[in-house]
Image (cartoon, rainbow, N blue to C red; front, side):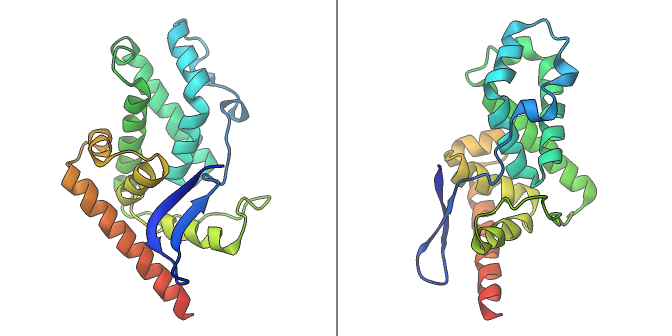
Length: 196
C-alpha cells in the first residue's frame, strides 16, 4: 500500500495523507489487452506495454478520474508513441516519454472542453475506503487538468519539480506556482467543507 503526503494540513491539524492510491487498481487485461496494437511485430514495444501498461493505466486514472477515459488516454498515447517507437526506445526513460504524451493529451482535451467539471458517476461498488477519501477525490476532481497533473506527478509519483517541468513542457517555476495554486484551492475547499 502506497502512502503520499498531499502537502496540506487537515482540519484536525494532521498532515493530509492519502493511502492506497489510486482507488482503482487497473490492468491492461481488464480492457481486452492492447487491442489496437496487437498486430505490432516489435517485441520490444509489446514487452514495454506488457510491463508498464498497468502503471500507465493507474496514471491515466489519476489524470482523468474515470477508468474508461484512462484506458482511452493510455490507448491514444501508446498509438502515438508506437509511431515513433524506434526513436523513443533509445531515450533514457521511455515511460517518462509516454507519461509526457498522456499529460499533454489530457491537458489538450481539457482545453478543448474548456473547464470541464468532472462529476464522477457512482461506481457499481464503492472504490473509496471512507467519506474522507471520497472528499479528497472530489476536491482533486475540481482542479484544472494542469494543476491536478502537477499534484499527481509531485505527490503520487514523487517526481522532482525539474522532471515534472520536463514531462509537462513547462518551467520549474510554473510547476511550483501550479502546485501552490492547486494546494490553495484544496485548502479552501477543505475550509468550506468544515464550515458545513
